[in-house]
Amino acid sequence: MSRKEIIAVILFILATVITIAGVVGVEAYRRRELYTVELTARAPEHGNWYPQEITVPLGEEVRILIRNIDTVSHGFALPDFEVAVPEIKAGQVAVVQFVANKSGTFPFLCTVWCAGRHMEMRGELIVE
Amino acid sequence: MSEDKLFGLIDLNFRFELTKFKLVRALCKSRWLPLLLILFNLFIFVIILLAGLFGGYSAGNYNFGIMMVWILWWVLLILMLVPGFARMWCLMCPFPIFSDWAQRGKLFEVRQGKLGGLNLKWPKRLSSMWVLNLAFLATTFFSGFFTVRPFATFILLGIIILVAFLTGLVFQKRTFCLYLCPVSGFQGLYSQFATAEVRRKDPEICKKHTPKTCFVGNEKGYGCPWLRTPFDFAKNTYCGLCLECFKTCPHDNMALNLRPPGVDLLVDTKREPRGLDEAYKAFIMLGIAIVFYLAFQGPWGVIKDMVRATTLEGYLGYITFHTVFNLLIIPGIFFLFAYLSKLFSGNKEVPLKKIFTNFSYTLVPLGLGVWIGFSLGIILPNGSYLLHILSDPFAWGWNLFGTAHFPWTPVLTHLLGYLQGATLIVFYLFSIAYGFRSSRQTYPDLPQARRGWIPMLGLLTLITTAFLWLFMG
Ligand SMILES: [Cu+2]
Image (cartoon, rainbow over the protein chains, first blue to last red):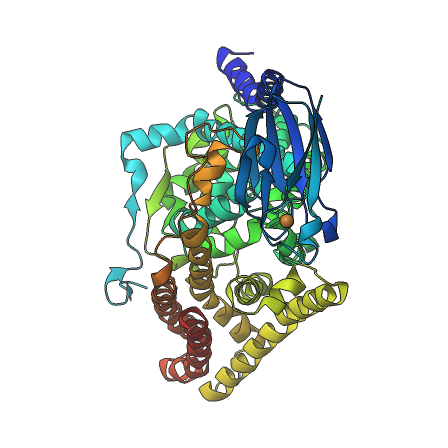
């Protein structure tokens, strides 16, 4: 193999394997740094918050990725920690971050009138 | 054709050779081109595939895969690459790299002798645009999902890559690109309109040159992977711009030219005849543009719901109508006008099929204009999303370039209708210009050509008026 051929093969590996490993690796590292929870938002008619119960460790800084997979907007509020996203559009992923500095069970809820059963779009955050 | 001027301005034989600049020729002859572009796009598409996979089933306005493929890539293709540089995308497309590598055993160097894989010839009966036509039409059945569900885009791209690889193992060279790739056909069709071309320079040099290294290959490069004959081919339709012929020609007799748009529409040679398959491509592209516009940019939510399969009945209705409309109704209307053309001309000898096929090429500029208009309707309102997704491609809260929170900003949308209308009129003029020339080629004398042209002019005007009404309301 000539030197140029080797360079071409290296570039190929960089573009494929290394890219995939890099993306996955960086995110895994970020998540180790920060306690990360994924939360899916859907109107109660279509499945409600998933999971509806989130458990996080006391004292840690927590990040929640709220993914709205509906075709309507939702909102997010966690009043006890003064966390709120007024509007999460369809398909958007909102990110909230806070320190879970008190233990107990705290409600979170949707703040956009998204569907007939909007009032039922609630869940609980458990800090322990 | 001694001095035939488009709009009385540009000589149709005018060419400006870009490769007369030493740097451009050196680039075309380097084996790093197009390889580096292909590798770069491979990187981009790996990220698109990852985003499609991680994005899953959520709505797509914020997904990197969907935005890159259906907003950026598609719009770039229609707005710039194809009308400007023909199959420029095929030059840098990453999908065939796996089968190329498998066939050649090398990425950069040139393999001597027979290529790997089974190297079978694609059946002659399928060597046309028919498979592409049906594959593309079938792909549009799912258009309502591609733009909303990242995973659907992942599946589509995955299938293309896999089929490209498998085809390359069984069949020779770029058989996949020529006869199977769903995005190949429309690029080929509209590349006839492109303002650039690769052609040989001096026919005498080619005549004397044996063996024809551009076709069989030599130590500098491969024989045309797209199975063209670079020493005499005359239209862009199937030229993948891979630049191998620049490398294999020992006389530097290949040229990359700028040219007046649309000149290939008049080409009808023995080796590259006009055909019903390309005629149908023109119909299908126009039909899809109409259906897409009605579904995605028109004010009728009902149609959008049908395309997005809100109910099964609605979706089946869409598929049925879409297929019948594209394969029967549009060609049927066109056939009627071809028949009228024959009646008007008073000619008895020219077969109706020839009239029908010849005139179908006049739909190429108009169809391209409609697609450009449609694409403006995608990019101007939604383009600003691109800034967001570039910074946070996987929706994990990244902010690579600091633009993750860039708000949705429509651009020039209050002028959108006028921009679409103006574009359409320009391309309508091209359709007329080439339409009359096609009529001249179809009928033996000028009076017949004039009379036979009237119904076609009427049809083109009708289509344009209908779209102007849709665009400008
Ligand atoms: Cu809600």
